[in-house]
Each structure stands twice: as C-alpha cells, then as structure tokens.
Image 1 (cartoon, rainbow, N blue to C red):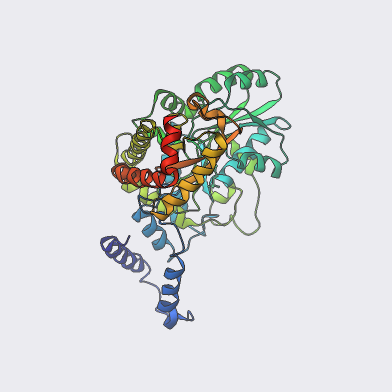
Image 2: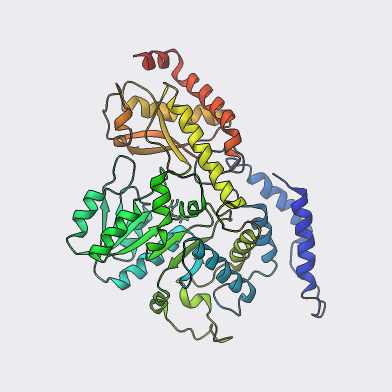
Length: 459
Ligand SMILES: Cc1ncc(COP(=O)(O)O)c(C=O)c1O
C-alpha cells in the first residue's frame, strides 16, 4: 500500500511549491492542535481499517478503483493552496489545468471546440447534461433504459422533466425496436445512451440510436460515466467498439475520471458538443468574476465552489499517462477487460455456474446453478459471504432473469429477477490475479454447494 518512493517525490514537490512563495514575509502559523496531530492521525488510520481493501486485487466487487499514486499526491500537493475552481481569482493555475485536462478528455471523444468542465461526479455531470437538454427541448421527454443508472430518473424528477424508462434486450442494452417506435411519436427531446451500464457494463447501440436521431431530431446524451475511457481500449468486441467509436456523435457526454480515470472521488466531467450551451449557464455574480475577462469556470457550471485539487490531480495523471490509444493508460483498461474475459471463460466451462452474456467491458455477472432461480439467488448470497471470509470481495446484484434466459437449461424460472454475483475487474492487476480469484471463488462455491451442488449440476 505504501510507496516510499512516491512519498519522497511528494516531499520534494512540497519544497518546490514552498519555494514559489519564498518572497513573502515570514510568519508563524497559529494553527491550533499541531502537537496532538500525530495522535489523531493514527486514530484516523485505525478507523479506516473498517473498509473493504479496495486497493487489493482480491477486491473485485463494486466500481471502486484506487487512484493513481500521482493523483493522490498531486491532490495533496494542491491542498497546500486549496484552490477553488469556481473563479480565476480562487484558483488560477488549477482553472487552467482543468481547461487543459478537460480538453484532453474531449479530444479522446473526437471533440475539439466544445464546452466542458469537471464537477463532483457522475450524478452532477448527468444533472447538468439533462438540464441543458431540457433547455434545448423544453417540455419534451427524457428517455433512458431500464439498465441506465437510476440517477437519470431521479434527476428528471428533481428538474421536473418528464422521464420514461425504455425496456432492454437480453444483454442489458436499450431495446432498439421499442426506441424506434417510441421516438416516432415526436415528443422525445433526449435519449440517454448508456455507454457501459453500472450493473453489467453493457454498451447501448449508439450507431443505431444516431441513425434514429438523424430521422427524428432528438438529442442524444451519452452517459459514459463508467465506459467512456474504453474508447481507448484495443480489445473490445465489435459492438462496443463501434458504439464507443461514435461517441462524438452525441450532443453531450459524461465521463467520470473518478471511475476509470484513476482519480480520487469528487471528479466527474460533462462535455457539450455545441459550446453555445454556455448561454444557459449565463449569470452574473456581484462578488466573483472581477479579476479577468477570461472565462471563469463558475460561469459554465452549476456548482460554485469546486476543488481545484481535483483538476491538479487529473492534469498530473494525464501528463503521466496520456489518454492515447496504445499507451500505458489504455493498457490498464485492456488488462481489466482481459481479466473479465478470462473469468467469464472459467465460469462458462464450469458446470456449477450459469453465465448470462459475455462482458462488453470489464464487468462479469454470474450465478450458481440450482434447481430454480430462487435457489440460485439464495446461493449467490451465500457464495458472496463465503468468498468474503476468504478475502475475495465480490458484489451482489438483482437483475432480470431474462439476461440468463438462453442458458437457464433445467433451472426453473420461478422469479423475474435473479440475485446474482457481479465482479467489476477494474484494476490492471486483476488480470494476473484471475487464477487466485478463481481458486477462492471455486473453494467458496464448493463450500456452499457441497454434495448437493454436485447433484444439481449432474441433473
Ligand atoms: C453509468 C453511470 N452513470 C452515472 C453514475 C453516477 O455517478 P456518481 O456515483 O459518480 O454520481 C454511475 C455510477 O456508478 C454510473 O455507473
């Protein structure tokens, strides 16, 4: 966990930062409590033990990826200044860094002269995108699939927009037959295309959605909070590759650097293809925008105070690991995806498990075979607990039984949803840990199924 080398580099950088302010008259800091600092900091370290080990490859549960060490350190370094990216006089350097880092994310999507900024995370980024969408098409409906993140429905309620949920196909993607008929009615303002669903990493068929947009003129918002960075991965299947390659055809895009972008939490990003979307944000502030006529980020975002440290961390990470095809950053994503394919193959070849569909990104869902979906659901939870005791941390999800329809075999379909196991293989290290992950999963499953499992599989 602890890298001495990076801490040494950090101390050097702190001294360099200090040197930049050496011209100021010396002053004695009167911060209270310094003599007790070490004691409480150790108490904090102890309190933090009460967490799953998200940084370890045996944590293969939810969407939790450790920030790159350089992101942690750049964030901490910036905290000596604590810049506020709301306005230029609150964070000159980090506002410039944010503009540069966001332009690099936009370039990754094929956009040059767009509008975009960082924000608190995927929820806030999607809120801004749907809010702009509602200004462009007032009174029209927002559509997102049943597997889209729940935030879209909730945001629509907050913004008092009319929201409709669209059915999915058996692979968790928007049902295109439904969408084609639905948009023909003419009252749809915006379709949310999820480029990597939260539960299964399914990628909506953006090329087909774009073709419908050409005919019906609705707006497309690409929620690529999770999957956006996979634009750079060279090992996707044809469907996901083609869809992500056309992400630039959307009107707005959300990508979360705090998911796959190696950033600490508090870093989402929203982009608008048409920079004139900035007109909707237009406001004046009697206290803020006095220091320059140059763009203050607060003039194009809904949040006011925002951590400049998040921009510093992102900028530094992208300097170290540029967002390019074939680079080290892309290779990290490719390893996670390869890990998901390797785990999927093991599951498919083991009769104790029933798989749904091949992963499109790096998320795998599966369930233990049983006599019925209810029994498989109960066993999923038992395996989840047994694996956790072995330090293998998976996740549990409740998903449509339809996802397994093609592979259920003799399993009685007595429930419309299945409680299944879910593994998000986000860390590059997951690839070389698949054998160990598999051993632990296999042993936990043997514990839960016992002799009865063998008979279920044989029947
Ligand atoms: C596709 C998608 N959109 C939006 C969100 C919400 O993002 P956040 O948790 O950063 O607010 C998530 C979170 O997992 C997501 O997966």
